[in-house]
Image (cartoon, rainbow, N blue to C red; front, side, top):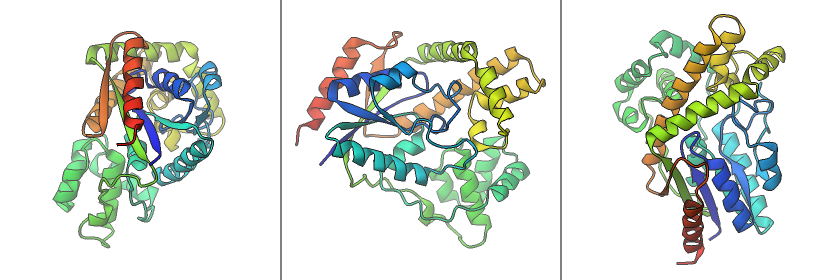
Length: 313
């Protein structure tokens, strides 16, 4: 069966450069699995690959969607699988690189996205009524409605909790058995999953440095430009870390120092959630990276691992 290589891990772990080096070695192309990098115009805050990196290896699903669009994981799955098939037909090796766990799962497993999309207005009402700023209150409500479903959804996965509550409160379903996503491997290809891990304090140091760099590169100007295009905090694309914190600063409600602190705090929390998500996936083979952006010895270990896994068993 055809193989697809996944390079995953928390934000600021160095996935992009490792994936590029691996794709260069194996004559591959990269499919992004990042829910923010897929939007046009969101370049700095989403930490898209640099123009030089994009020239080195062909990337797919970077800057493809208008930031005013509501983009679903079902749509991502369809586009990404089309890209992977195109890469196979070019006799190249597909690499999927990113840290959006649901996007990664959508490609690793056959998942059912046939449920009706529901109402964003209804979900926003649930969010405000229950107190969405405290994820525990949303998860507690789901526990009341369907304890079994609540055990399968992480308390911090607010989007999925809201969707579950919406379906249950609609009165059409007593339990969310159809909603549960069983981990049935994708039949279109087999997967080699590489995880990049860094010691927590090293990762947090890298996150701090990344946020400082994004601010130096012009995150404020990018947010001002996006707002001038008609985007607002109500658009899904502007709820990403880096954007949602800068909007209050741009509007004069908080200081730049406070915005930067909030971005760093929220990014650290996000990285922790990513490690919890990926840590539950038995398919991943983890590689430990130290402080350097790219460790040649670690890269060679990854290359040997991929070679071994590509040999038919």
